[in-house]
Amino acid sequence: MASLSRALRVAATCPRWSRTRGLGLRALTGQAGPTAEKSVPYRRTLKDPQGPSTAARGPSQPLPSTANVVVIGGGSLGCQTLYHLAKLGVSGAVLLERERLTSGTTWHTAGLLWQLRPSDVEVELLAHTRRVVSHDLEEETGLHTGWIQNGGLFIASNRQRLDEYKRLMSLGKAYGVESHVLSPAETKALYPLMNVDDLYGTLYVPHDGTMDPAGTCTALTRAAAARGAQVIENCPVTGIRVRTDDFGVRRVAAVETEHGSIQTPCVVNCAGVWASAVGRMAGVKVPLVAMHHAYVVTERIEGIQNMPNVRDHDASVYLRLQGDALSVGGYETNPIFWEEVSDKFAFGLFDLDWDVFTQHIEGAINRVPVLEKTGVKSTVCGPGVSITCSLTTAAGSASAATSPTPRTTLLCSPTTSPWRGAT
Image (cartoon, rainbow, N blue to C red; front, side):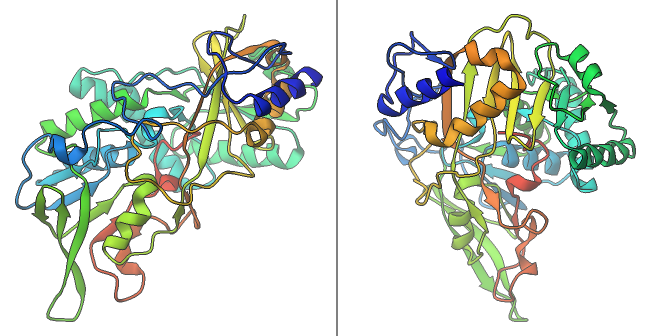
């Protein structure tokens, strides 16, 4: 732990590192390096805002004059929504993306899929999503989503957590999700690098795994387009027009963009960290906040290949298998909030704050001790999980809110995303 403390002190005083040196969880004798830019084909970032605007480039295809449904946002939620609308036979469905698909949050997410959740609705959604990602999309489009089925392992470091996992196992059976409660010894046999001295047991879900977010979104939109849906990139939404009908009810009438308007009776807000801004266009208050969210990718770890992904709720950390290395991240208990979300942000990253991230490293080292002597190859800190104030009421028709709220404005929140996992 002393060497880790030193590494974090160095990181705090020298936030810009040489990527060739890497950032080590082991003791450091030199300086540390910068937050890595994840490789993407689109180079406009908040750090480098130069380049042609979306307005200058124009939309990727002409806007239709009317649509039965307009989905705003081309991240994971928007692409999933469009796919399922098209598959359900909804004609005239249009997705509008202000930049390129996956911009904002989706492009840098970890892509984890954990099927078991406390809510039966979530378990059903996640089991369905696994089938779509692991089988349906490739069969429908011929495109690979990057699905890797290496399993998921939930850590129980106290009796209450183990009892909770036993309930999850029972819930999962109703939806065909296979899982097994393992003893510490069985856990050690499955994951030899894991410290099990402080464990009461684990919950192993063999059919959990990971996907490539960009590849999955491409497959989703390809399948939706094959059923008649439209995907229009480089088309920022500037307003949502509403009207009052003969009964005094305010209803959605059209979506306005920088390149024209689309008459529509229904809007689905899948704008992620921009969802609050989109909601205000229709007079809808969206209970979301944005924050910085990070993970680090380690150097090679001998013996880590084919290990399951790990989720330790009490330590607020996850370990995602990444070839012969691990991605280490978690949900911050002391996050940095993104108070004013930039409308120019697309494929950018923030500098990682090591004071905030320390708890994840400590939890990861306790669980997999070899990490203390493992270097870090790169770090990713982007616009993080948009948190809803209520985990159960954030999705649905805005007409359920106060009466002045326009009808047929729908919110799709990250808390209800079928593959929200650990992003």
